[in-house]
Image (cartoon, rainbow, N blue to C red; front, side, top):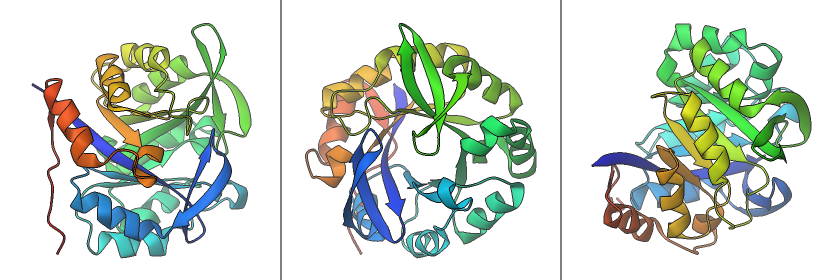
Length: 258
């Protein structure tokens, strides 16, 4: 039985959890730590924190939120946004993160992927890719929370990132993000084919449990979810049950709140 992961994604601006559509029109939902604790108790396998404005300021500002979360949420935490140097990575790991996602800085200096992998381990280095479709079977890498074009081909970039030492790929479809129209299955399939055994997290578009299963069938090893969880459209136990019924094993289980 294939083992997969269910990962709530929490986009953060300042002290607040926010949510938008296609990474725009951001709406404040509450304190990220409160949502993180709720998802942990409901059996999330991991969490992803995204500082959505970090690229504007050139730094990640989640350190206090990371520390507060790490105090009572005991599952792996990936932090992404504004991490540009090995020192930036070290700072968020010391604050309590387990893995880091790097996007903008890696597109500008790919060698950073190798440096982070060699110093902290490949399991810590997550290549975060924001993808927009630009033609049939073609996607371009975007940065700065889906605002800036790079001219880089997504599939080629994923393969290069793995060759440089990325231990995981976080693949976000900007076109589908927040739409609840389902994951970009062609995108998932295309990237999955070129990264070998490196785990792939599909992000952007989940609206139903059917979308979850479809992403897994195209090669995703994990799914990141935001809208469906934040707005209580589907809860994690229901999502877990759907995956189990489809023949997938899940790491997480319900944890009674302390």
